Image (cartoon, rainbow, N blue to C red; front, side, top):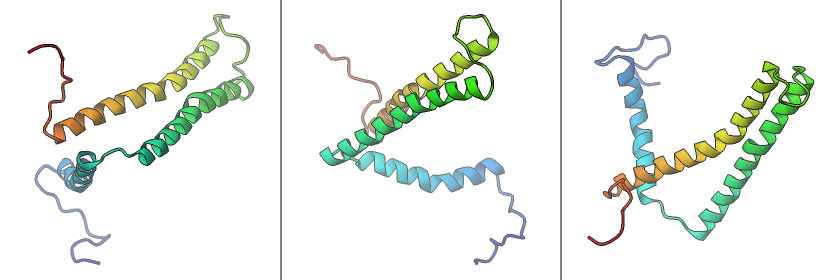
Length: 135
């Protein structure tokens, strides 16, 4: 073990406090992620493997988990019956199921847009999409 990094020693307080320590620890991870985003190029193999993973992820998160929630809510919590009866539990059950269904889809779209703009910025391009037409 290196000197000054023992488990029984109190953390050294630096300028900025806790936020400074977190940003210092995350800096190497951010550099590695930015290098990967900047240099990554799709091949047929990586695209197919990624699409298979994405299909599996969407099936599990958008179909299996909401279905499990509906069975759980009806059998274990007693929130059964058809919707539309005006009971707040049924409406809450359906709202949670809808959130579990649409949440992963929206998350995938947002992450894709953020990564695409981040990659463009790292490569020195504008984050805005070209408008096209005559200039």
